[in-house]
Length: 221
Image (cartoon, rainbow, N blue to C red; front, side, top):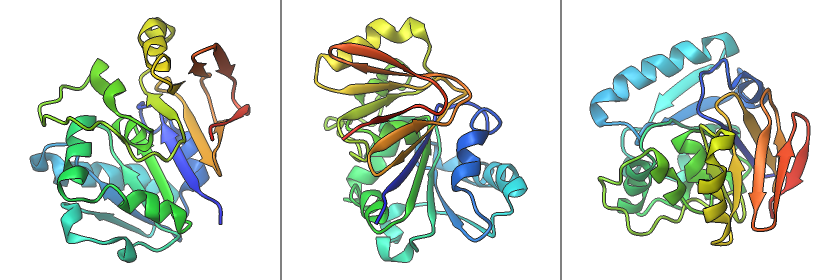
């Protein structure tokens, strides 16, 4: 069974349209995880997402306010777990504090779809500490391991070439860094990342920097 993970660089829905078109289907339910945002913003986030998904004729959108109230068995293999941007440390803390880090990986193993933009994309990787370039760790997260859906790779969203020096530091720790500009999207199917465009994505390893043009692919496993 194929594993399907989709990532957005943190731009607008128009910036990420190429990746949204790939995984959104009228037959699929979208389950929104909003925990990178303060709870007071959950209702507004749900309204925003419903508006943004309207052109895709998605039949059902559901927001989970607390992962503790749900199990992986509530997710159908056709469901999309849609993880919003915001504070990555708050997002990880919510899952850690409810012993729910395995829920999304299990959904993916069962054939389900995971999509993350910005913080949601960072969460999919091997470690989220890279989000410290923008996000304060007010939650006091000490274990920064992410969901591990991308092998040894971590995601640096909102990326520009000016972030090279910062990202090389992460490669020295053994990570592959996916530098994703806001106008970019990646599909990662069975461990192979394909750039959906429109912007180039940079792939940094301890020994190389590869520019992944739209249509190009690279194995992550």
